[in-house]
Structures are given as C-alpha cells and as structure tokens.
Amino acid sequence: MAKIKIPEGFRGKLGSPMAMDVHWVDVKLKSGELYKKLVVRNSRYITGRHDDQNGEGDLPFSTEDIEDIRRQSIVPYWLYKLLKP
Image (cartoon, rainbow, N blue to C red; front, side):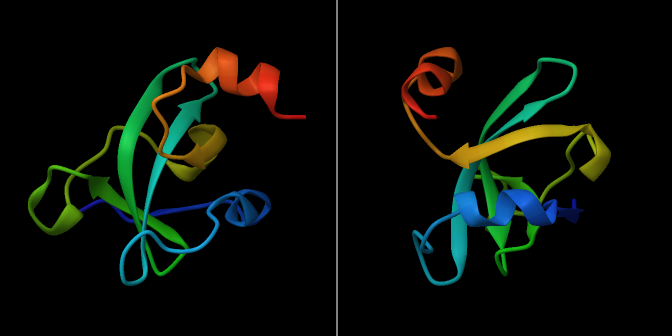
C-alpha cells in the first residue's frame, strides 16, 4: 500500500470528505504525469487508486514528485488551471 504524504500546502484543496474520511483527488507530478481518482485517507495520505481493493495499492511516485493536487474532476487539468486563480 502506498502512503504518500500530501504536502501541507495542498491539504486545503481537498475540501470536505467525499465519503467517510475519504477524498478522491487528481495529482499532477513535476514530470507532467497526471494520476486521476487517487484515494486520500485521513486528509493526509494518498493510499492508492479508486479501483484498488479498499483504495490501497502501490503508486510510482513520492511526496517530492507532487506539483499540484485537485479534487477529482472530469475537467481536463489544463482547463482547470485556466479557470482557477
């Protein structure tokens, strides 16, 4: 199971939990890669993908690789960045 700590500055972007203490987020990495529908538990840790058993699985990045986080969305990331200040 991944246990990737969300940088402090991004925690405010999580909003209220989507289910009991669970958030779904999209993560953009410094390399430009985008990971969608990741599970966040305890408002602090990314634990896996939404379709992993119990939202717990392996992920190929670490806290240092994260460039941005947003709540899970169907809007393309480039458009999201244009609409949000």
